[in-house]
Image (cartoon, rainbow, N blue to C red):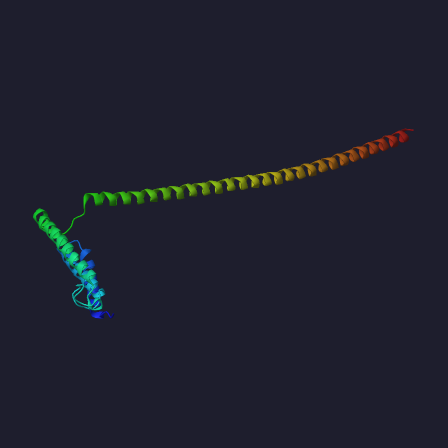
Length: 208
């Protein structure tokens, strides 16, 4: 069984055009899209059913020469459904034109609420993310501040230790200087006493 490519291409073009028209906001274009899409699908079903044959009547024709009745029945049903949908959309177009003077579909209030709820959820998630980021940043800053405080305390302890060592060294040097000064004073006192004693001895001998 061979299938022609031209009907398939035409069916694809009709289906693509119908889907594009269905995505529009104008109900007239939506109606045209329903009709074009229905015709494209019907053409696709008929093309997929194979070549035309004899009427499917058992006992009158050979089975291999008969046409497949299933695609024909499906196309007939699809035509009826497409007609009903087209009548319904046409009634909607007429009613909308009477109410608003336009055939464009406006945003529904419930759709707006759903969209606002979605945006509200996104905003809540964004706020939560910002809060988590802020808490993490505060924790990092606190940890850094604690580290700096510990480091400064360690530096202060080290500086205090160095200062204490310097004071101890100065005290030691001062003590050594005091000891040396005391020794020199003692030696000077002894020398002065010895000199005075010698002077007294010399005076005594001179009197004698």
